[in-house]
Length: 427
Image 1 (tube, rainbow, N blue to C red):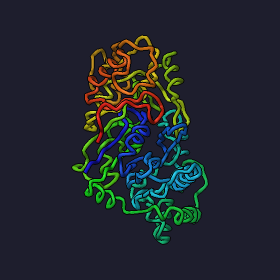
Image 2: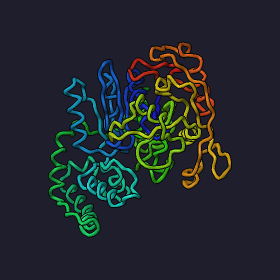
Image 3: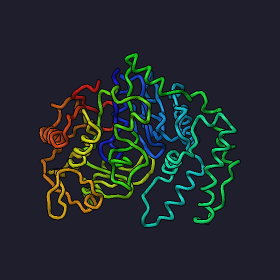
Image 4: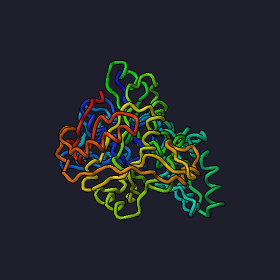
């Protein structure tokens, strides 16, 4: 039962879509297990570029079944729009499966997200405003709406009314907004029911049966390790668990069935939104990384903050996820630098610290301790094997591998599907 978890080992945007797509031809199921349309993957197939927000990357691989697990929050309008866009481009989306236990992002969740973030002002978290956090909050508060509720109008009406009892008080009395009509919300949600009904299934049963039949199942995280609600840079995090443990709770597949956990590492570091970022660059190097790497959020459209590679974060990701392998992406972006700094530790209150501090205050004040590695000027986008890389590029990869604590089994040397060096098989 070969089950693999593929997740971001930094703050997200590491190139998980490319890695998932690389494995797609060998994988029977690709499963999103958390997050919603606040995540984004860019996948390049030939001369075609696809931007996916909610759908698993495996939807672009013929023969692969894409699955949205119970741990995902689903905005039906976004889902249908994304499916329509792919269908127009000739992509077969008929195999998609959606867990009936996945929670629905309702119109009032989006409204609460936006007004709350504006109300916070300077203290804002930097959310995408797409209702993700409020939907997960409703889930935990046991007033959430699940996909299966769309098929019982009476239950749906009761649940929406219960959720709006409190939210309308909040909107009208604190935020000076108009109350939201429960009947209008129910009518809108019921309008989606027939459109997605053919995709809804007991995905937990299907996935466990598939693993019992020795099918290959790939679990795909939506954001990165440092955005995990429990293990990330709280409170500047997402509202779910993109770490490896989330793959189990977000799909109903037990941990004993997972054989590999693959972390995606960018050859430098980026993040979107607010929060501490020790290696962030505010100079010409930072701007060059942003420009050459095309560092703009697929979903948010926001410029990503850029900095040098942070080995402390990589080691932390290895530890909390139990990583067995790394996929190093965007190595080609570093071509042209004579020297490349790598953060090997932090300085906090005059002391050298080599592991991620558990204290948010300490992390906020951490200063990077750099070691400088020789760069390279040769074009590496045509490299097909590790030996094809310039010596300094090889040494850079080996250094990152040693610092990060897990083997680098694949390297992205360009944006295309075929611009990848496979060192060790993931299967």
